[in-house]
Length: 246
Image (cartoon, rainbow, N blue to C red; front, side):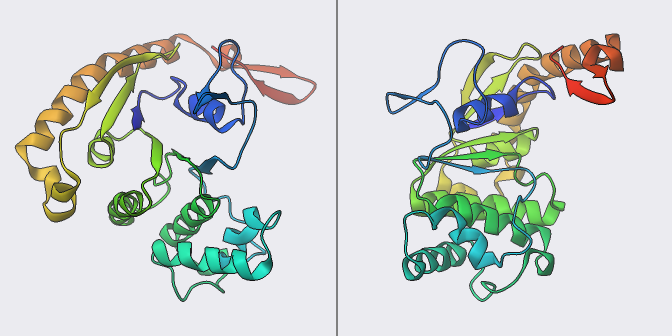
């Protein structure tokens, strides 16, 4: 599932609530019938920024979440397996400063997968890398999800990325964000791996449909932002800035 929507509509907030990093003002979110009340090992999170520990090697970054209940030999074996899965065999002893942006995000994905979560939550994970690396990572993610059979909830602003990755795309409205509609993407995984799917008429048709749904929400979002000021968005007190809802 990919969630697509204009900036500020609440995509990342929704993901944070599923991750247990934020609490909803009302209502609840459940996973397999269990109400989410905080972070848990049944959910792995990959953030837009790599969030790696700079003093740890790639291997040690992946083993970090396993240290509570796995012995060293077991967690290193698990970490090596997942680093291999994301194409980083041979880079286990490299520190984050020795890795490219795409490689850092691969480490972050391996770390999230190593805890063997039921759901992988990804908040614009490829936004910080260059266009070529982004396309490679998209294909790698498809392969990884095929290999691991993980459920993925993926946040993006990119219509093309949404279509390429998703079985279903949920389009959100502008603030206050709700799900406007959910579109099925009837493109087989085989086609995505073997064809230049983004140049096909089928892809273009889905892109047009999603853009027509999204365009109105983007315009509404921009109109809302143009009417507010910095003071509307922030409260300044005692030399501190606190974000508040619009």
